[in-house]
Amino acid sequence: MDDHPFLIAGGGIGGLAAALGLARHGRPVRLFEQAQTFEEVGAGLQMSPNGVRALKALGAWDAVEPSCVIPSEIHVRDGLSGALLQRIRLGKTFEERFGAPYRVCHRADLLAGLVTAARRNFAIELNTARRATGAEEAADHVRLAFADGASARGAGVIAADGIRSALRAGVAGDVKATPRGVILYRGLMALQRVPPEIEADCVTLWLCPGAHVVHYPVSNWRNFNVVVAIEGSLPDEGWKTPAHSGEVPRRLPGVCEELSLLLAAPASWMRWPGADLPALPQWSKGRVALLGDAAHATLPFLAQGAVMALEDAVVLSREVAQTADLPAALRSYEGLRRPRTARVQDQSRGMSRIYHAQGVVALARNLALRLAGPSHALGRLEWIYRWTPESAG
Ligand SMILES: Cc1cc2nc3c(=O)[nH]c(=O)nc-3n(C[C@H](O)[C@H](O)[C@H](O)COP(=O)(O)OP(=O)(O)OC[C@H]3O[C@@H](n4cnc5c(N)ncnc54)[C@H](O)[C@@H]3O)c2cc1C
Image (cartoon, rainbow, N blue to C red; front, side, top):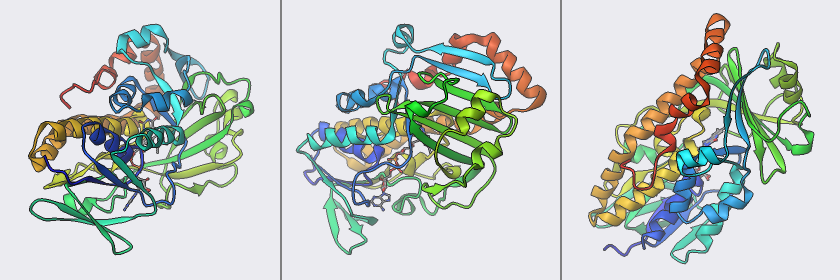
């Protein structure tokens, strides 16, 4: 077995998960994050049963679970009339059906749990303020170069450096994220600020013409996360751009009273253009592989981006443990993960047609949701939620 450490570029959810997975299979890991500290912008995150299973396989669930919230139900509502179209209970029956629970959390809490688990593992070295710029391969090792002119030598490199990955070009050529005609807004507020008209213990999805809204409690019931997606375009100015005051309520006129009260509640909003990645020609090249958003960034409409990165980490580390030939192991990881992540990307794109329908199409959708019931809705998600660490991909 190759004793050089694995080098990971990027200390987000995917990079930390990969570090945990590889270390659990006995591989030493050096992780390099460009930021000064491990921090997560962004707000809430839905942790579906497949994500919980991946976290358990990575040995991180114990560190993450305490900050998660157990929502009581998922509600789907019509944003204009306020009518409840579908209700999915998330209790015992749900857990029995999928063999793991459904939780919601703040992304910073998930990241903190992963960092805690990584710090407990002596095989993992965590470095901050190190920006990777490229990877260069030799016959039996690979060298990761940094912006400060230094470099590190390792058995392999995992590029977990996000949707704007600097290392992707070396593996897959110049593929850029594609804006998908939607503006995303996120607002975070203390739970006490949530208007009483809103059922704050649920995950709620509001369907509006040309838009949708998702909200749920996070951070062990301290805060409340609201994400709004509205059709439109914006220049890409990163994830930390504040929205103009009143912009969100103004862009969603005509919504029902409960929803309009909620949209007026957050003191501030951030906004950014929704984008995903087109299919890459390849995710791995020799001893270098892409993971998480760097490989398959997806629109958040199925709430699966981070969960896919966690699953990637489980499969990658399993393949590396099973094969002495590292490039072959990375190719195998890619082959196993591509179909599933491509399907998630594709279905996430398609969700906006359903969520944002207008007029008679929206009426037909609402009727179908009412008639179909929760079991049918969950049936459509089985292929996602039933994933296990032993699954093929
Ligand atoms: C509004 C919204 C809601 C979402 N909701 C959900 C949800 O409910 N469930 C879910 O599963 N997913 C959700 N997602 C998706 C999820 O947040 C992402 O898919 C996930 O964070 C990807 O993790 P990553 O580690 O691959 O990339 P990132 O989180 O982007 O992390 C990349 C890391 O690499 C670092 N980095 C970048 N370049 C370099 C470099 N050159 N050198 C060193 N470090 C570098 C960055 O600083 C960062 O820390 C949502 C996304 C959005 C936008």
